[in-house]
Length: 335
Image 1 (cartoon, rainbow, N blue to C red):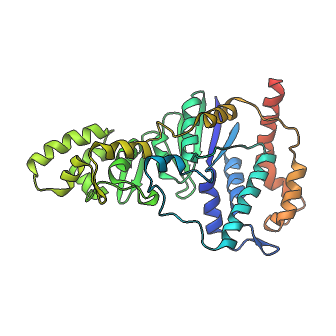
Image 2 (image 1 turned 180 degrees about the vertical axis):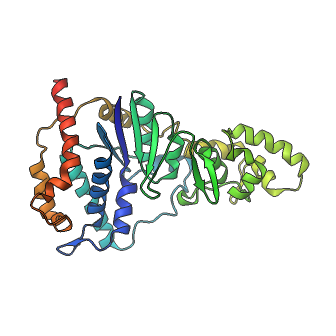
Image 3 (image 1 turned 90 degrees about the horizontal axis):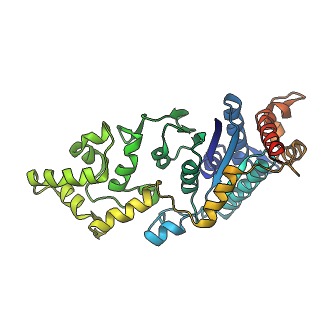
């Protein structure tokens, strides 16, 4: 069975851009480039994948969810420092150029988020074993018998049946979606039920920590609990769909499900066709090659951060060259 690595590109490059601050060449920050390539290199060196696909958020990635929920991610702002923002965009484009030469597939679709693209890829690739490389907790709802997650933040794998840490609680991965529908997501500016934080939620519904629970189960039990706790604001708000912005009834749950639930990824037809192509088609090797990579590494000052040996470029590129051989063989066999 084909083993495929699915990389959340924006997640990985932001870790490097903000975390690797002292890597420079000719006065230009290269921390994001170095961290992305070196992290991926080390991971591929320790594992064995037939295919690597990097998914990128488009610059208009929030637009589809904003049609549903206008406040979506409005709490996020681009860096007000124009120099830093330009450096980030420049390094991101440079990483894309490296990946192109390395036979790494890349998917970016206007108005789409990487989460949705990854979710759709998982749906159409039942014949592949997939590892998602991301520290984004939203993606844990995709874990299954054929989908594992590796988090570069915690440096651990999350497999089917594992728990995910939310606040001070260990939550089964299959309940993350239901919990986020109820409590919202402050990082994405999604409101939750008023006065229903995770601690209160687990007090009333401890089964969320033990077994798979559907939203309908929570609402049904909430009705029974309210009969015994008639003045409880959290339960009242749960059943009325009340947030800090007002009372929305069933509409609250309809909207939050659309925002959170990756079983229904928000991708247009063009996006689906593009993901389909990168799943099924082989990559044309024409124009790609390690000589281009060496030239780019020299231009970006990558060599000064490698071991001081004559064959340091081989050391760095070896995992990618192994992937290159696999992709070239696949293309040759399909001709």
